[in-house]
Amino acid sequence: MAKPMEKASIKKADLQQLLNGQVANWAMLYIKIHQYHWYVKGPHFYTLHQKFEELYKEVDQYMDKIAERILALGGSPVSTTKEILASATIKEDKPGLDAEQMVAKLTADYELLIDEMGLAMQVAEEHGDDGTADMLLGMRTSLETHVWMLKSYLGK
Image (cartoon, rainbow, N blue to C red):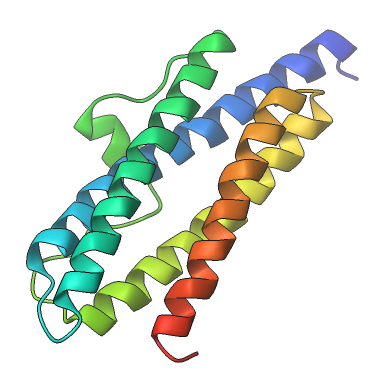
């Protein structure tokens, strides 16, 4: 049977791994949404071009907050391309998607992040880390709103 301190260390390590997965996913999203911003075409170009810019700026802030939280907890955030690619569950896209495909893929990526944040929040709460859980809850709530709006754009 593990001692309580050992259990806490395991949970803390698990939480930092989950948070590093978030940093990696936000880094991938930053690149992906920037790509969408650059390559979007069609009748909704102006609207989506502006929205994608708003979203990648938000992504940058979230990535930074999570990385700084990892540092505050005594961990090391992923910071190299190799680490990000190894840790991310969100995958990159090649240019050439139409606007609707971009919005659909972004919606799916946000839904993945929502699910993964839920797990990280659960681990943070089990560890008594209310600061991390609260930070993730705010981000998750914002993503849920984005998903609703993106789905509405798609007519779903």
